[in-house]
Length: 511
Image (cartoon, rainbow, N blue to C red; front, side, top):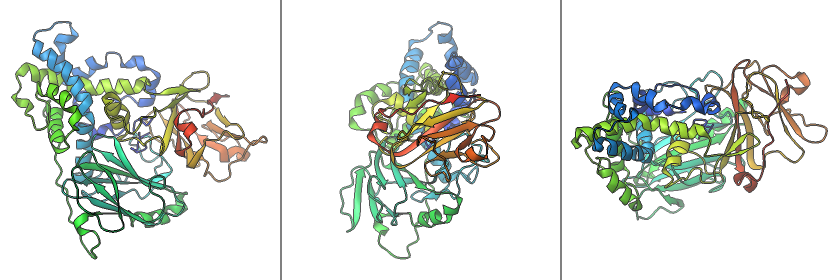
């Protein structure tokens, strides 16, 4: 459930799907447009995807055709393709984030829910997502987002927030690789007003009194994913007032009064793969130079350098067979990542619910999962200690959730164990919130008027029509036709959720 993205990261993945953020890659490498929810139920439909994808780009198809027929004309082409796929998996977060950063910093927003702000400046959402937003992001309906791209290359940047009282809030600090490296928020640093230095690689200076240092970022560029809980529409003005007090200040300006921060929008423009089939590789090489990988990746990078992939390298200098192999690898690489994500092999299945692995949010050297389950599906993913998102696509009999009436019943004492809050949200097969007559998009522990069962349990009604006035407070509307899925979000979950010892009950069909 996208964080990313938006919340993030079925994600997700729920696909946090800002895959269109990597629009250059998507335009050149995919022709599917199939919804994540439907594809999850029919993984066989993805068979042959590489062939379809490469046919969508003539240059890529010409590069791929020999191997699809079993014929090998040039070992350099085949070697570049094989190693290039590995390099694409390794480098996908860099390519994705280059697109995302350029769009959010320099391009006019596509809608009022599309982030747009200069470097080192927050963009704040001012309303909750509803069914009118059709971006297919599996958004949450609980928090307002605050996003910022931050440059720590020259000096630290100080993040400050006011006293947050008992309100849930978090600032997820994400490296350019899509891995989280630290948090500021209720769990990590407490609710009191504070100032926190975001520090880039190699910085060793002194901080002003009262400024707390966060962990050193592994890359000079980082993304802040902020979330602030909203207790319904009436609470929005109070959240807006808090957002106005979230500040980012370069260290040399911190503590000065009436300082106007310079507006920066000078970020590198990724090479459009629709115009240049080698664009993803040129973008990757530039981003690896801008955000140097850790030293222990040197052996891998020396191998990639043999095909012109690496910090600052010129892929155009490679022989034509190598370039063709790289074009082919980029064209099929995204499809490969999508198939891995949709396979569900990354999750633990319990009662039809997909539980994320404990490494979520910091896959590190697990490059396949880092690319697919963090970057592709939602820009970034929360550490499980901060939030766990479960996704369900099937009922208790293993059948796809579709038109009909369903129940989700928590027995007495079996509600999701959390220290913050939990919510259940339904999405259509295009990953959008579902239009309904009562404008309700989620139910959870903050829903007004929930009615418990006589034994103290809680039954939720998942169906397109009202279950009756006396049960309507427990109703989560679903589509009148078509398939759908649900996401259960649990913020500050207890350890038994993180390690999957708490089992969410299955969804049962009753009509």
